[in-house]
Length: 305
Image (cartoon, rainbow, N blue to C red; front, side, top):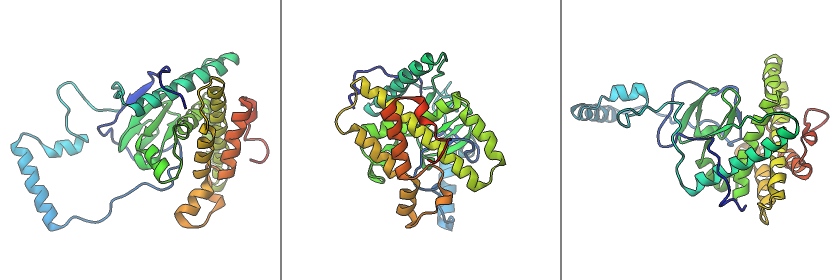
C-alpha cells in the first residue's frame, strides 16, 4: 500500500504511555475479534511479597510519594498542570506506525465524505484513539485484550497498536493493507452509526434472546466488512494499492472468522455463538463491497448472509 507522503488525519488521540482508567466492562461497543477473552492474572500474594511491598511503600513515602494516592488515582503525576484523563488529546507520536494509521484514517475520511456528499448528507468524521494496556470510553472500560472496537457513544475507534503484532504473529495476517482493513472495518461501524443502523440494532437486541442477538450481530459485522471493502475499492481507484494488498485484506478476513478462531482456540465450533461471521462470510462480504463500491451492495439484513 503506497501510503507515504499522503495526507494524515488530525482526528487522532494518543493515550499511549499511561493508563486512562476507571469503570467496569465494555458495553455497547463493536469490536474486532481478538481471538480470546480478557487476560487475567491469577494467584495470591505470599508473605514475603507483602513484606516487600510494605518496605517499598515506606521507601516511596520517604521520597515524598504517597503510593496509596497513586493507586487511587490510577498513576503517578506527570508534572504540574498535566492530568491523564479520557479527554487526553496529546499530539500523536511521529513514528511510522502512527503516521500509517493517520494516513489510513485520512483515506477513510476522504472516501466517506465523498459518498455522504453524493447522498446529500454530511459525514461526521470519527476520532481514532491510540492506547496501550487499557483505557476508558463512553462504552466503558477496555483493555488490549478487547481488541480494536468502535464506541457509538462517543463516535471513536479504540485501538491498542500491539494488536497489529498479534494479527501478524498469532493470526498469520500480516501486511499493511491487512492492518488498514482493521481500521476501515471499525470506521464501517461508525458509518452504520451515522446511518442509524447501530441505534436500531442496539434497541432491538434488548428484546432478543442471546442466540437471536448473535445472529443479528453477525449481519452488523458483515456489513462493516462490506463497508471496509467499499473503502478498499476507492483506494484502488486512487492507485494506492500494490500487488498483493487485496490478498492481505482477504487473508485477514479469513483468519478472524468465528469458525476459524474457535477451531484454533478450542478445536471445535459452536455456530450459535458466532457474532462476527464465518471466515467465508467475512471474505465474501468484504469482496462484495470491494467489487461494487456501492452502499446498496452491502445489505446484509435481507436474505441469507
